[in-house]
Image 1 (spheres, rainbow, N blue to C red):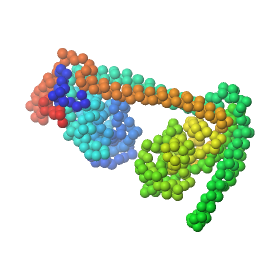
Image 2 (image 1 turned 90 degrees about the horizontal axis):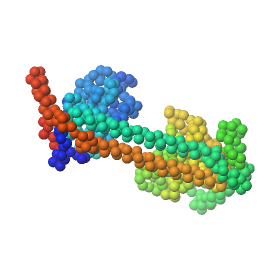
Image 3 (image 1 turned 90 degrees about the vertical axis):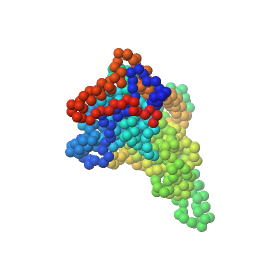
Image 4 (image 1 turned 180 degrees about the vertical axis):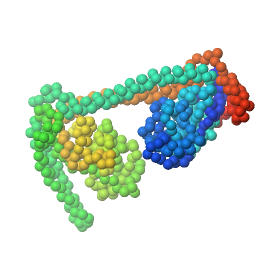
Length: 539
């Protein structure tokens, strides 16, 4: 029953359908004028502060107004304990009961329902306003494009399912009982997700301390290179790469000369510096390593470590273009690159010219260097032959002596992130890693065969974590779906049994109207209309 249709929906015995405005003595919204904010005073809240069934989130939107301005605003809209707040603009179809005593005023994006307490229970109204019925009606009746707006008059006309007052209590009690059980289950599931995260980091920590491959090393100790051999291999790799760059430079110079020396002459690559080993002081701050392993600085095992830059806005294109341009939000905490998020492109000319220094290729490793948070690391996939990056990302391109996934997992380790983060420069709440910090990062290396085994040991464990995480996440989603199913059954009259001794809602309304009529005749106050047949259930 996603919408109430009086012709094809049989109401439970004792229930009636009335327009929402008949169960409330006021349905209004917050001020339409931006107030004069103060550093302190009366809290002024918006849609950002409310979530269904959750405590008010004061931190998500923290604004204050003066007492004088508050007194002026509450002449029209006075939020009080047990009133119901609901969004009118943007994200629609939920509500939050005011379950706090603090004095507040509200902005135009929030609607306010002040229920008749002798007709309906506030908690019942809150649950009804969070039901699929209201979610669907809110979106159907909203107007505008982009950020939808629910007209106040439409919300006042929403059909409201009103059971006998005693049954409302039973419904609320049953919903709270079932929701409490759901909350406990969801809390356990979320706790499991946190434990998985801790386990993942424990796996990575053990891997790069040599503990995951301790038994494997014992079995293969006669075939593994020692530290001195590794150092020799590193030097040979760096020299080989330098010679390759020289050949590429010579070819580029010939092409430049053949083109009449047009433009700037290609820059000759610099011979790699002879890097000294880590000092005793530096090593003392690092975890100890198994025999045969050693620490080296990142620039010893990687091609030129560089970062990107950002061209002008008119050189960036959304959704299409020649070369994909990676931003920090495309990096993840699981090693994968997610280019489905706001994909941006640059032209081939920009890539070859302005951004030529930061070209990226498949199997390069990218890490964000501006935070918080730091620690987003991704392996570049082969979806495109070439990519480029912005200024908040550093690129590592490892030599053949190192497996790229080995470095990937090392950079994803919280131990590594914490150590590098301590060196970051903090400016106005930002943490920035310089290229020098990235190049000086200490990397524990071992034989190529052991690297391969380490990656295998990590991935066999993390793949199980991935499967468990998927299952847990699916169960959390199912729990939220079950919450909506409970509300659906509640407002179909199927959640609790009916009691024939309950006073029907229609009789309650007649009695309340009689009392109001009597009060009107005594006090000449405005009569409260409670015509239970005036609601339209098709609109």
